[in-house]
Image (cartoon, rainbow, N blue to C red; front, side, top):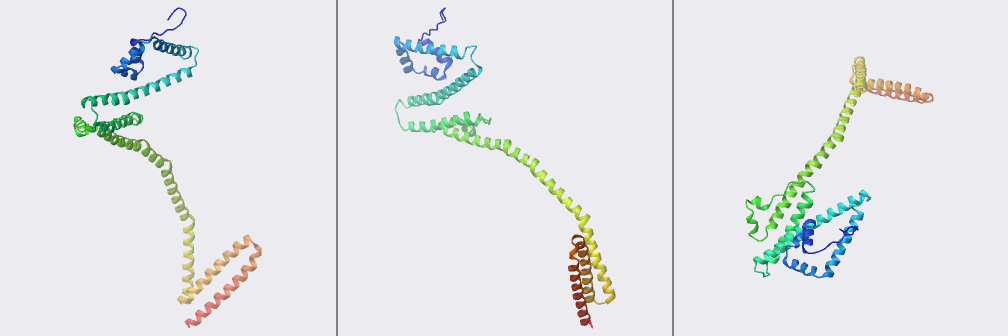
Length: 311
């Protein structure tokens, strides 16, 4: 940096290598491929390309210095920049892992093992590669966010890791072990974090209070039954028994005692109705009296008929 605060970035092989090793896992990995390294050196040998890249990097540096690194920049801008950089680095790491290391590097190793000749092994490699990517994605985006236990490798289950590589599809079995382990982990997590708390909440907030209310209602009904209904029932039973015993003692005839008891109960009921109606509606007295007379005449007639039958 000169005295007039102007920034000039000189781009050469060492600068690019240093930048790659510090900033990007992908760029750092690309330096391991001789063809790419030769191509980069060839491009940097051109002054136009080198200066153009230097101008772009200088411009980016000045923009970052003026917007992000400035003390006058708002805090939300700095936070947003850090989050964007974090996301970019995460994708950079995933690309380096899934595409370069587990993809291209593995393919080149397989090609070298097969004397640089393609064959059916390419199909097996592609199938195993898809299984490998799926396995890594499940571990990174399912197991880690949900804090599940680390999936057990299929080779560890069988007692040996080398057995996974015998058939050329090691990641298929590893994926099977991962999915099985994740399935058990998710089921256990749902049971402990959701099902059991929900069950306990329902038990405490709904089932137990409802059960208590039902028991309280049952006790209340039993109490009121013993307080009001049962005494009236006992009194009615006592009245019927006394009326029947008195009529049977007088007539010494079961049919006449039954009829007389019915008449007495009818009269008693009518008296209660008359009292209730008299309180509620005085004008209904005449109607009740007429009904009472008719009932009395009918009961007397029935009693006479029964008396004639018993003679």
